[in-house]
Length: 399
Image 1 (cartoon, rainbow, N blue to C red):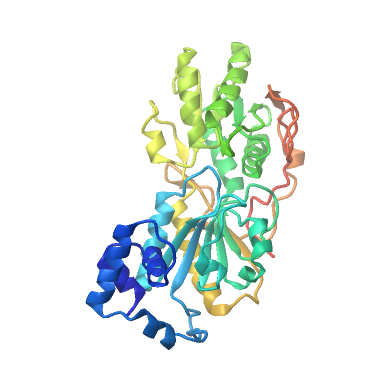
Image 2 (cartoon, rainbow, N blue to C red):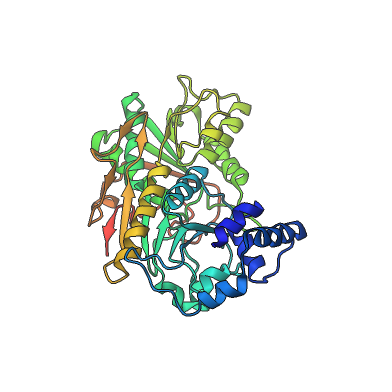
């Protein structure tokens, strides 16, 4: 008799059933009653199950011992993509594996008991694992792990593999799209110059312009980022960018702009419309990124938005975790980048690319740029003028 069957009969999550069966605190008396009733109906004896399970269960050939996989949401102030969550749940279900989902966004957030006790076969992480949690539980680095999406800094992961978007290709796609529409003055709106992700997208955007149209100028409007209770304040970031854009004389304004994230694009639409600028007409062309359909439906006209292919990222992450569980931790960690698409066009001939070296020469090939910033000098990898360093690891590599 498995805890999964008890959870299904009681109509509660696996984690809730596990806590109640193991006499852990549970805030819902209704859930406790439902689990106890299901245990009685199904003849589940917790003590007998514990006696039977004493001693560490041996791993099967595919690395499965507990049938538990943890999915940790590690990004403070953001929500996990439903596309990623749905794909992970479906793939784990196909192998009869239990999903333990938890938010670990701040140093004060505690890891799930199953993770701390080693009662999981693998870890999927959305974001980057906090160093404080490793210090508190060093043995966690012996659990196979795969991280999804990008780190917010340019550091390497302590352990585990990573599947992330190809930010180099994202910048290329945006530049090609705007240049193909005949724009001679382009702009890049950077909501947070301390973000390695936005730096990488700008470096490749500017590099592509220089390579294909060196006489085209690129204006950079930037903010040092804004936080409210530790969360990104996108309204403040967008307001700063809009103020800079509107302060630019009309004759000098770019006619085509790349905004590297849809949540900023939505707010820029509203601010520019209030200022009497019609986005999407002959005066201003916008390309965005993330292909967040729930946000794009709120923008009229709907801008083209680069799809980072989150479902592919999730699928590859789960497949990689299965491989790592089976083959162990002795082989080198890998970082895999997934190519983006825009209107069905890919930035590469393949939808998945693995490269061992980062393209060189980006910093030396940036086009003529005009940097604008209304914020003071910022910490991180950028400076107060909105300049960025093309030293991120936006391409796939093996280490």
